[in-house]
Amino acid sequence: MNGFSDLGIAVIGTGFIGTVHIGALRRLGMHIAGVLGSNAARGAERAAALGVPRAYDSLDQLLADPAVDAVHVTSPNHAHYAQVKAILAAGKHVICEKPLAMTSAESAEMVELARASGRIAAVCYNTRFYPLNQQARGMVSAGELGDIRLVTGHYHQDWLAKASDWNWRLETDEGGALRSVADIGTHWIDLVSFIAGAKPTAILAELATFIPERRRPLGPVETFAKAGAEASEARRIETDDAALILLRFANGARGSITTSQVSHGRKNAMSWEISGAAGSAAWNSEHPDHLWLGHREVPNQVLQRDPGLMNALGSAAASLPGGHIEGFADTFFALFGAVYADILAGRRSEQANYASFEDGHYEMLFCDAVLKSARESSWVDVGGQG
Image (cartoon, rainbow, N blue to C red; front, side):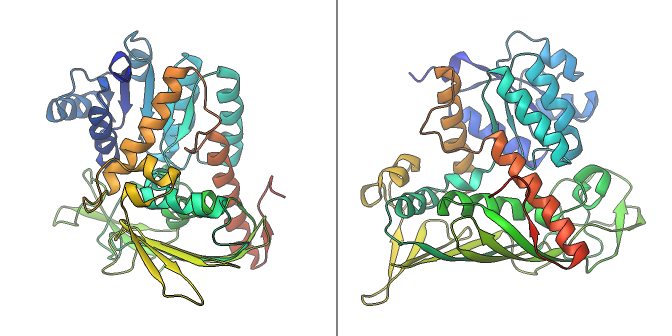
């Protein structure tokens, strides 16, 4: 027994990603004590639909429940700061969705509070836990690609490609000043930094808002839901539909990323390619069980995920035999397994490779740099780095 069943978990947020969290926690054998919805009625409705025993009426009620050892925060971005502060003050462990906060000032405070609390505090950069991304991390660490030279890729989606598409992330007061960069671009930056073993220290960014006015439904809308014929109102949009960013890494590498939430046909296409002095590697989230390996003097290879053919990091992250595809939901299973092993141990392991609040704060500094660079049309250093 891993001891996970002895822990009580509460989840804040009952939408798409909150449901993903609950599914992964159940697969680990966790006890879901309850959920907190956007309001009491919504929480009760979703708790019943998800088979969760309790819907809390408020955050205070959740935090007063002695059965809750850890809290998952999957609420809209603007709520993270206050909720995480309260969770840590109540002495509970916290797993927070990205981005960590709305501003780097908030995230800096959250880092200090997490350190002082002695509790495990993790950020849900789940894409680290596709097994072949762990494999790539191990390959880079072992020097198999040589010194890293070039890191390129994109993260493209199409769920906001039409003026009738709507989500709370579109508005600055709920999602923040950045959208495609903060919502999906930070996933890519965290992932390639994890694999390459270095973070960008300076960036040059251009932001684009191709749909400056959208139709906002007057009722609630689930993430990734298709636009319907419901009553709506016109809303001015200031957040980015897409971005182009050049990167300079701490280890001397150069890179580039494009983000888009308006690319028709790209449902959730996250890709990276890393070129080193001795070889290259590339991966795409829509084909997650294949890692391309590039060579100069021998044929290129494609490694299909198979624990028996992978290095220690890669095989440790894999939970299914080769040929049984591991996808999006499996990454949360692997991530939460690592986090809760540390919670049971009472401290973060030296080998832990899930994102910390320090990593989440770096992403907020990265977003600050993107906004400044786009505004000034110039290279900008990422605060707190090299």
